Image 1 (cartoon, rainbow, N blue to C red):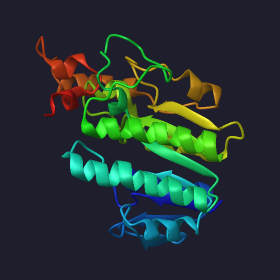
Image 2: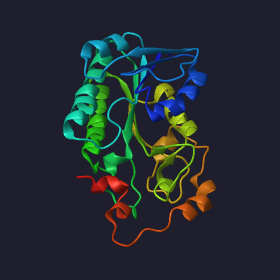
Image 3: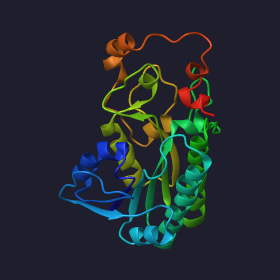
Image 4: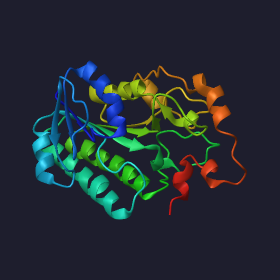
Length: 259
């Protein structure tokens, strides 16, 4: 597999690069700036999502993509539009033209951030984004559906929670995703023979869980890491919230308060 990882200088990519390299032997990395500490088997090509010619040149070198590139937090509309909407279109269109086989798309829990925490939602629930960023991720999922159904790409959307070695607060106890478990999900999207167009949640074994991830389970996902292993230290460091705080009512946390 000729694998491309976009957004390779970002925090999530930095955590999974060694694991991808171990699994696939070589990885093509791309971002606007060069990632630190390139390893044997990693090749870097600078590219901007807003430059179609640069993205087209990238796609000629791969047959599968993990797309982490773009704006990764809430931001004014223009950068979100340029990177996460227009830029993502450039990725999909170049992938179609160059006959890329599979795309794993880093969606986000913020595509469904306005669901309350006291209900469990699955992959079939309508999107309820909490920010412009969340809207862009909902768009990205829909765009992947178009290219899967119309053009035959195999598309795997992962609504990622929070990627880290351990959860650091009460909210992340429910949405935490260990890097090893993220790579397991990416591998399903890249390798599973039955993937056509899928949306799953990106979290490890979390308690309390806000998401029903049965579709990921059906595809073979078996997370290895448990947020409950960190419960005592997290609860000790993060006191219970006060009543009536909207950021504690909705799954999106403080993103629901963003202007």
